[in-house]
Length: 108
Image (tube, rainbow, N blue to C red; front, top):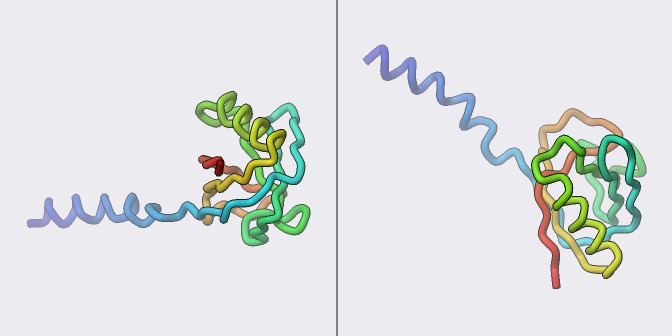
């Protein structure tokens, strides 16, 4: 019984992180800014809880992210075509100039 309780208590922290991702509505990318560490993108959507620059409208795909080249290419294509995107980011991210985005959807 004590072993079972220990296992459950060990798993609780993993469950507490579930659902911390937040989704943006579908928005148009206003600007792209490639830099040495990745690709910054600006949208009309803002979350000042995680992004402190440009009114909370600044997000980033870091070059260290898995599949960075695919994500950056997709953002550039959506930007050039004027397509709307929805993206996901960590809602518990410590507030900084730009919030790292993890996943994207492009609207036709």
